[in-house]
Length: 588
Image 1 (cartoon, one colour):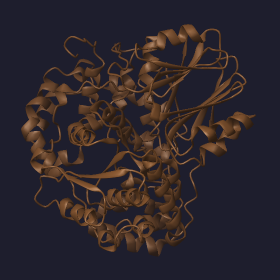
Image 2 (cartoon, one colour):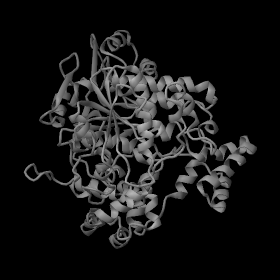
Image 3 (spheres, rainbow, N blue to C red):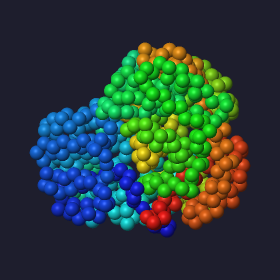
Image 4 (cartoon, rainbow, N blue to C red):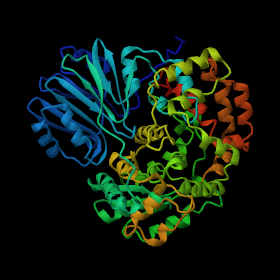
């Protein structure tokens, strides 16, 4: 294996949890996993069951005899409901019903008759990993915690796969340490009573996209309302993004209607003079009676690429989110200072209320006249080149064949080909995430998962209701051609929010984009990016050509940079640096 011995574990108080079987070896294993500030919840035997770092707000536990149930995250269920579920639980498989009905975003963990069940979300926002520590199967929501406990080495071949952008499904869920196994989203992990034997079983199935817009609109509204209610039910002050776009505006009006918490709506205008977010945000805020509207000065908004050299968050995978870290998190301390206990974002609306235009690839066979008319509209709207569009529509390869044939062949085959083998060897069966046959096969939860982890350290946890499983299910049940069309902007969300969001706020069809801010960010922070390449950890591993990267970085306005081709490389480079030994005296 290539030298990839760099390894770290959470050392800034980041949240994590580890699940241990009720086994005589568990106390010793827990001792190896426990950090100085770790908390412990025990089995009925007194042996450790959950070990880690979490807030009281995100942990709900119930007991019934020796049975234990825990919900870790944000969930509509309370301790009373969990206790009732625990008292009647006779088979771990019976938890499928609970997992498929509870609103929110959470991990579900159960202990029954010496057996364990651990699961995350179908969205992939909350993941589950497992490995063996001293012969005992241990599960966690973070791969790096398990890797540190076993002294595992980073697999450089798997890291090479993360240089792709986007990383296609199912490769994003391949842990960077081969001794750690990931549970595919939509599946749960079971550990037998021997504390060793494991199985992965499906608990979630993609809904058939058979409903019309009018049939599903009410269910989408209800699912979003429930998701917002999970965030506001504890009262206090909750802040909401209010960009002026339909996604964040919808959540703000749902939150205000509940009147369970005091709302602060937060708008950070872009620097681009063509950015029309602020006028739309003010229009919405005028209707939000009782909500406080915080508008931050555009000139104080951090640019893309800011503070890259100072990032030291310990994460269990690289993320392009580091490029925007300063922009995404900068207002959180200000909102916390105003009393906010939680920040709600509209992230995810683009991915569930809308869908990929690639769904028309399948629709072309079933409803050719409809598909051809829509595709002409998309081509005019998005300026698609005619030749590549026709070639894509004519491509009838299976997803597995497409994936196998589409990964690039980087310049150094001894590393790059190893990355291809490492990724594709674990990609079988590589099936589409959605039912369109094409579309966004790389799940969108990874960047949000890391932003959520970083936000806690920044002073205020973030949460994204659009990525709750119940919301996703409601949206994905709708015909793709009803969700994405060149003639209407987000028709599903518009239909769902009619009567909740004022009509004038539903009329927006524009969307601000940050290409100007990105180019200006590279001009201003180019020296920091160049410093990454001057002593590149990726180059030490033979994965990048620093001369090419330096040249690309030196030209902020080059058209290639509009496609975010630098982002995954920067994400991997910054992540490798965070794995280096941590010194409490100098912060590194």
